[in-house]
Length: 228
Length: 406
Ligand SMILES: Nc1ncnc2c1ncn2[C@@H]1O[C@H](COP(=O)(O)OP(=O)(O)O)[C@@H](O)[C@H]1O
Ligand SMILES: [Mg+2]
Image (cartoon, rainbow over all chains, first blue to last red; front, side, top):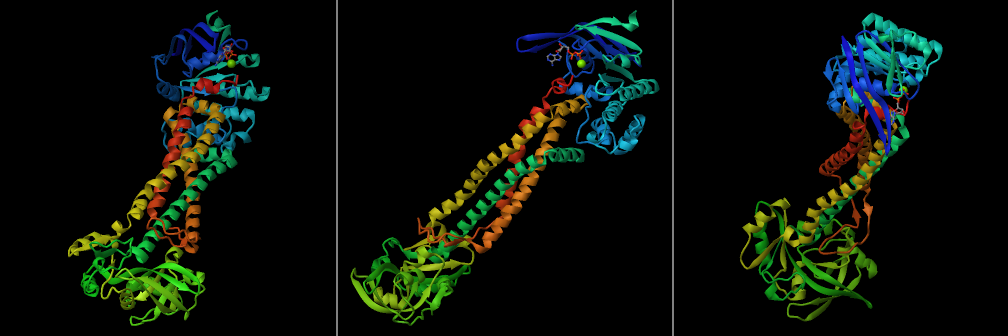
């Protein structure tokens, strides 16, 4: 099953007169259940590619197909709708809403999906348990360590049972122990629920978890472990 | 909805001092506007009330040729047999009281000091004269058959250093165009609370005023008070004719009625201006928080929040701020109005301008209508103004919002 299919995509950023070709014709297919790592030096286009797969951004040319659905011509609200049910995000910085508790942060996507209070409660507790944070449910982000915050972010990304989770350097701001713990959790969830993971990283300690490694350089895929 | 409220409330709490200050701006604006509205209303009520009670009454009947500016007591300008006419009118259902009055011009003098006055002949027993009777500060009221007594206002007594029992000299312009002069004894000194009125008028019993001025049994007007002033047109229509002019209070006080009608529009425009200013404070606060929360908005968008929901979130914040500010401001404005409504605001003698009499002390009066108008306007303006920052937030691209982090 193809979860995401990127066809010959380019993305050019324009700031004033300066043009940056972040992606220079990339094609990539992500299949269900994969645990894919996007690697490459800083500036090679990993984040840009993740944002395109996640429909946070639109390509300058080429097409992005998510779950068989062409997304290139969707409006902003249609893209928000698509993301809501199918794609979860984990960012490099601990992207929690600072005014909400761990519980409420995880609950947010469920709220946006119109789940009933009872459904929400059950699901949130289940998710927090999955990331070993039941005892921190009612703490605000500033009362949690970086690793704990990132685990909350993972739980939130999983809340709506998305088909795919995109994680952008999820361990970059964590020490080794916490980094490994977050990766372990993601791996465990991948194996247990079959959720597809794509994560960008240039941390070699993390790459070992991947079932597939895609290497980017200067906006091009230079290597894909699946296609030796 | 409760979730929006919860988030909005916590977001406001993030910069508590900033939120409080901008809410306070709205509160102060609201309080001030409420007090101004109350003050204005009090002033309008007082001047209308005072003018009707002391000066114009609800209806006046005069001779068709009478000119109120001349105060002539020449016979052709006067009403014959006013007692009979007054009695007939008083028999009407809607009429509280009808009483003849004679008004002549004259000069009060004592030693080498003098002052120009209106000499008003009144029927002492009539309840139309209650404002003077109840306003006595010294001496007693006139009796109908008093031939030497005179009633003078407190400011006049002050300026001429007169006490009860003192003798004064009164000059009058008579019916045949002459001048007559006679000694009177000050029986009483009154105050109506309106200096401008009290300093220019003296009272004699009608019979004495008639004989003194040569008007014989005639009067300048029949002064009518109704049970309800809204019935003036109806009553006036019923007593029209017979060579009289019948004037209602709204005709007698055109300027006052006009000012009253305009005061609502005036208050409304004032509200718009002041609230426009306070709204910019709120908008500024919201703009700051939109820019501070760029990344957060990006996260919310990334996890599926739509533009409309982001607008709702920020508008909820604005509404909460508006609600707090307006509620506190209303309370403050109400307290101010209530306090000054009971002790009054002293202005002193503002003079009679354009037929408008004002009490020396103005009592702010807050109407429910003015309060609701203000609260609703304040809320609508604030929330409308907040649409701009809210839309700005909703239009942020998630990518832009999330960048800068890696
Ligand atoms: N919003 C942006 N505006 C302009 N240039 C950008 C923007 N985002 C990324 N770039 C540029 O695109 C290139 C790829 O960036 P990025 O996808 O963030 O790489 P990586 O995540 O691999 O470090 C870099 O040269 C970066 O400077
Ligand atoms: Mg990156």
